Image (cartoon, rainbow, N blue to C red; front, side):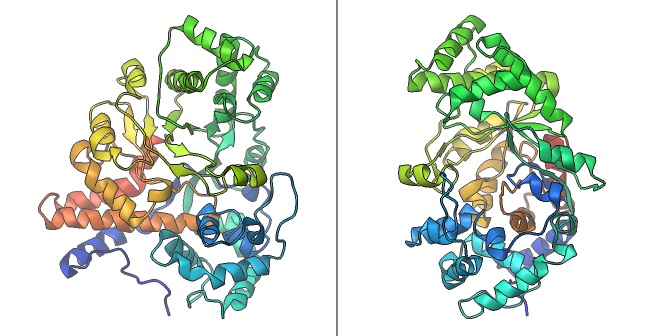
Length: 468
């Protein structure tokens, strides 16, 4: 008995459904390119068993626990660790029972589909999760996790992952990536340069971070040129450990291209702590342009993820720290915000800037027209709240007629939940094939072209955009 409908997400019309099914069958077994995400490289360095089902499916996954929190279940009860190290719920079976008792809350959501895909296709379960079978589910998954075939490296290989990118702070020593490289395992896990902690003046501990940045690079980060040299040194270090991209999570898409003397003066204000909120945003914007220029030298793809109003709940931030499900999309401007960056480097050959959004209203009005004319600019896939069938469909409908498929970069899963990787890629493949089938059915795309586009959306575009 299957938990999931094998024709899920395909169009209702039988002829179009048949076309979508054929397209999907041509790409469903292609290797997974996972060029942006937040899996822990220690999993693959140490290759130890995942501790229990709750730690695998609930505790690291804000998609799962934020829905439970929305219904009044406390983060403590879900085992989410506190920022000060105080203990929360430590009984993984109790956490799992909470998930099972409340699994109905996820009906109709992509989270339900991701979880059920994992239950069925990774762990071989054949009945939906309920309160009644919670313990049997837990015991089955826990037993599997004790087997060699369910160690992280074995699962990685079973998922047919060709390459997986993690994301590390500019201050990270990358010890887990070193350990992976020194092992005899052939799985490809690469890092991504994420310098927010030393770029965002409003990041907690920014001043201490800048001091550490100077110490680990041997550069004088009390001055502007030394600071830029420290970035160049760290980017080179990350490239040595497989990085092909940098990633920047800024509140806005603002960019700037100041004269270097102006930039140096702004940097002095930033490191002295005498800056305004506007100056902090201006500095972040200047650094995007500086990172793009560094990409011209070292070849790293630049990713910009603006528009998240992070840590919306101050109480949750204070008690549990960052990234606990309270990041909310906000209105974001791109046309004016990106103009300084694109005027500076938008026509540079070989440069790839991948722009993401959490503001869907900008797809047709701003982002697709920009990506449809500037050679350096590409559109990232629907992200975060819009990593879903409907989100992918809206994205394709709003952008394709203006910038086509080849100014986009395929799909990335952006996940901390390892077992959701094939599930998320499966949703993307089904959603894209359904859209392509509609184009064929309405005479906008030839059938042979649809098969080529399906391949490129699944595999080719991501490899090219991220130089993988």
